[in-house]
Image (tube, rainbow, N blue to C red):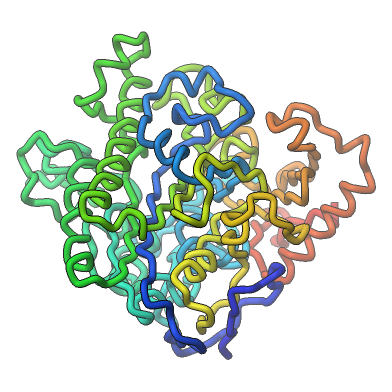
Length: 519
């Protein structure tokens, strides 16, 4: 059956995914406003909380000083900065949560999806067999094995009069499945989006990987007019995004742009426009390449903001800036000691510690979000779905899936608006890398208020942190607070059971790993 969702949700829905067989189209119960805003989601790949000159922490940290991001600073001055914004530990789960409004533990896509069909990306493990997760990703079509069947956000927007554009990385499902094609998600324009999660090359000189005899599956599609040129991938995507916005602007049609850069994902390439500056500043080659990728992304942001102003639509365009997971902290390819690249946050991409899930997020909405404002309330990636639909004036709609996210529009109006004492959940029952790292592989976490519990499935160990006092997660308070550990373990377990979340199997017994409240 269908679940109908009104944007004034006040709590997390605890409804298991059902088996609807027909995709619902959005329907309005009230007239839409005459002038609806354009909406841009500017989504960066693998960008950490510290990877900019904008301080999302309580002060400017040493890592902030390595980066030159004047347009992120500009956006922060014009809109609201969120200091407790979250995604998931790796990319595909976050991207699917944004498009479906579901928590990753609920939609069951808990690891990144391979571009190759029927390829489970989990590494082999001596202790566990793989969880039964949806490794074929998101599908807007029923009956595709190992997928979550759901109504995508752009489809709802398109059905309600928005012109929908996708540019850059998609990565919602493998090649040969419906989820690999942005057109199936409701996008009317698709530029360079398919099943891949990273580019073969960022260089126009290398045709972004499309060289006969050398191309592999990660070669970036489209962009032929830039082949053989010196146009960096980030720049080419920006130029194409601007072209795609011209039509709806001329037609006075509201548009939704999903600007999803491949940057700053590996492979690390030097963006020659910015690279030498970082070498001169004393960074080694790897970190200079990384910083140049960040600055190229920042230039793209500024170019899009300038384009909107030049076309007199800036004031009526909402711009949401977000990353899909924490910054990469593996060395190599990064330099330095592993898991220090997001300090003072702990660990990085792949981890349920803060370095792996806390993200740089900003929202500019003229006349709604006060300039240079800051919101410290926790929000999470699935909140984008109901928030964007509320921004678009779509007050009621039908979806196949229940919606877990809550609109953060009230926070944009009042950064300290009262909110429910909500629970945020992260669930990573997978083996992302061959060896375990801090909070990486087989971990779950729950945050309620300032308290965060982490559950290690391999050892059964639980850690407890007060994030208000200890965002670095250095002081484990589990032993001092056994009652709270028990309470949060119970809440986490109840939710995972309700969502029928995937769990790895213990090889010795063939049974699922115990829930946190069973340890």
